[in-house]
Every structure is written in C-alpha cells, then in structure tokens.
Image (cartoon, rainbow, N blue to C red; front, side, top):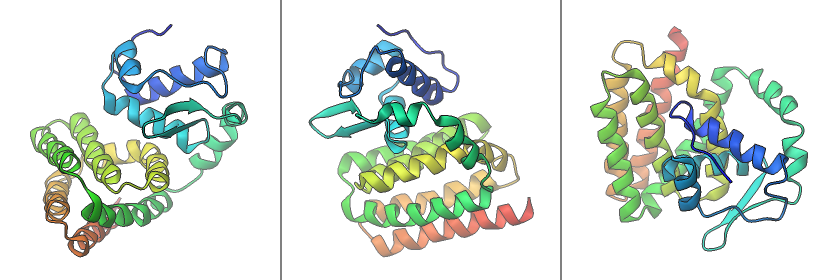
Length: 228
C-alpha cells in the first residue's frame, strides 16, 4: 500500500504521499486513514512527522481528525486538492514580515494557553526540543528542525486545535526564512535563551511570564528582519 520516504523534507514528502493516496482513489473522501502509528511504520518516519503532515492537510481542508476517533478524508477534500496552485500562489505573494506577524499573534496566544494547559508529557516534549536545539547549535539544518519542534511542542501544549492548524500553515511557509536567519551571528544562542525562559514559564504554569517571553521572541525576530 505505501512505501518508505527518504529523510529529505520528510513532512513535505509525506504530505505529497497522502495527497497522492487521495487523488489516486486509494483512500476516498469519507474514508479513515490508518492510525498514525501505522502510517509512521509504513512510511518509515517518526510520529511527529506524521502528526505535522496531518496538521498541514487538515489546515487546508483535506483531512479532519478527532482524538479517540481517528483521521479521515473530508468529504470536500477534492476541492482543496484540485486547486492547490491558486492557494500556493497567493501564499507565495505574502511578505515574510506579514507571515511572521500572523504567526506571532497565534504563537503568543498558544504560549499563554500552554502555560495554563500543558500536561507533564507536553512539558517533557518542550524540554527535549530545547535540548535538541542546544545540541545542534553548530549544525544549522538540525537547529532549524529542533527550533520548529520546540514551537510545535508549545503549540500542541496549548490544546487549541484550530489555532494549532493556523500555526502549522505559517511555520510551513517560514521554514526557508528561518533557515536563513539562523546563519546570522548570535541568533541561535539568543533563540535558546528566550525559549528556555518560555519552557520555564510553561513548566511553572505562569501564563503571564509565558506571554511576556513570547512577545520578547517576537520583538527579537522583528529586529532581525529589520536588519536583513
């Protein structure tokens, strides 16, 4: 039914594979997908990759999912799949600053919610991602992946599915911009400093502090964009 995916651009590749399954009729509108664990095993990727690919397709109206129920193809999925160029063209016209502004409105809200709602496992994922950032400080590509994993862990801890889907769209668009930003001097170390404080605020269930640090992160990125 499914083949393994190479290590390059895992989320993008998995999104393409899932789209192909639907367009080819292998999975039809209304059908449930295999479980996320099954998808991960079949495609040879991690659960986080499957989760993110599902979120991307959910955000554009192809998939829907509910905890305890599973993930299924929306009845109107073909409309979204057959008109991707117009959506991509419009998104491609957006300036990086506009996308960042939209992202941080969502991110600040999700960070504050995370400090209110994070479970123990959520907090563990946030710290693990931060540890990965520190371990990858000399490897730009690995650092970007770890940075995205950190923000994704915070977003998931906010437990608001709609906000999380909007966040997925923005971070998917900004990945290339982030990859360029981390090449600048001290950017990675400053990101780690701020995000450690975000992790601490979430772990301490301090939404006011979490919001304050998310705003500081936004201001830091705006300063970088102003100098580029």
